[in-house]
Image (cartoon, rainbow, N blue to C red; front, side):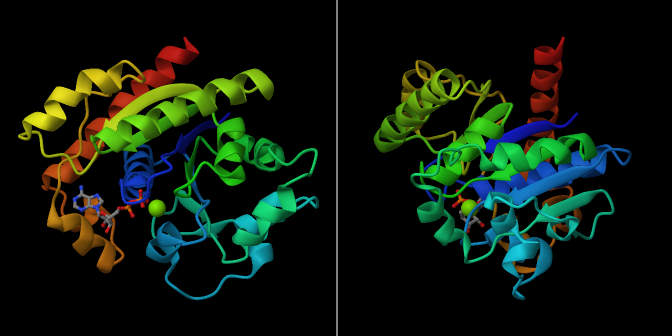
Length: 259
Ligand code: ADP
Ligand code: MG
């Protein structure tokens, strides 16, 4: 049965997509016998364009289909450059899902329902969330086993983290979900600033911070432009090493929870 990890923060530009892609590639590379699925829940389709290019994908072959009443077909699953990594791509029509689901009795459960059969097929399912606490993000929380929050430390990020924490509590209570917080991961991190160091204890009152932190490197942007994964493009880079460490840290958390 798959472990479902939601990569969530309602702020944009905190490296959610970069982290989802790096973890997907890290898991796929370290376990050739396991099947990994990345689901792009953002209508901006950044993860999709890096994995598949910018050509249009029909709604029925995209994440859009996961939110419809009819069961999605296997055409939503797309192969990638790695044999054991698959993606359910995004589609611009995803924006319509928000209004479709508002008022629907099962509006927060559609993704969870759609994942039931996929859970048997994959070992890891990663959800790349949009930059909002929208009905799509709540669907991700209802469906997920674990939540990872990429974050940059600032006064505003602390308010945002409290909102995520509150949403997790509500989702678990009201929707009988069982999402656990794996933790916050400091991304685009510049450890030298004393301000960000001083604020870490404040963040830790709300959510645990993982040991692995992701530094900045221009290699990330370069790899994205070339549509390569960071481990292929710059295996010796500090960001590649940091994401390897994060992948291992998360696997230890998953294993600890299962024990
Ligand atoms: P989000 O999905 O949260 O909006 P992205 O993953 O798209 O965030 O990242 C936002 C921007 O920051 C992108 O241009 C990305 O290439 C860049 N970026 C992400 N992580 C790093 C990093 N470690 N070093 C340098 N640039 C990064
Ligand atoms: Mg993104």
